Amino acid sequence: MNRRLERVNVASLRVAVISTLLVAVVYALVSMLVVVFVTNNLTSQVDNRLASSLNVYERFVPQFTANGVGDSGQGGLSSPPLVWWVFPAGVLPNGQTQVTNISDATPLPMADAGVTDPVTIQVKGVDVRLVGTHVVTRFGAARLLVGFNVDSVSQARSSLIFTETI
Image 1: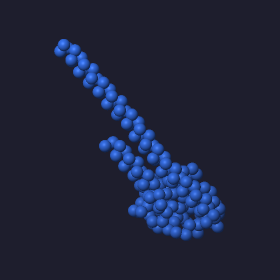
Image 2: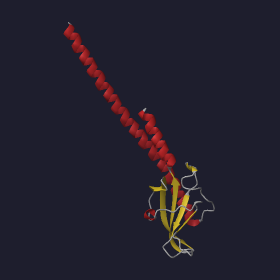
Image 3: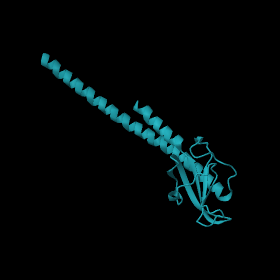
Image 4: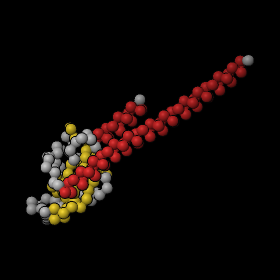
């Protein structure tokens, strides 16, 4: 009789361990799907704003100044866009190759000046979602690049991962 109880005890422990592992795996998969869904949704919102801003700035030069790339207040979905015009060397009268609406004149890394589709890059250690196109200005051909600080998307993803881990 005692052996029978031991077998039942071992079997019930095995069922409990397998059930716990199965629930943990399902929870991990659902958590990953939530993180991917939220990140894609927020990034899609930023990409839509980028596309509409790019369309506007192709026709009209922005008449505002954005704060520095990493300033507090930047990074929200309602923060102003960061705009760069990149010219070939020798085109601008002052010898520069970039004009921007950013108050501290943060330059865009030249490696990212050829971007056409939305991509996330680092500018001064800050995640910036960037898109660009060719435009013709009064100085000649240039690249127009519009970006948004997407630290809020990165923070939301990190917070979500941290919350799901706990």
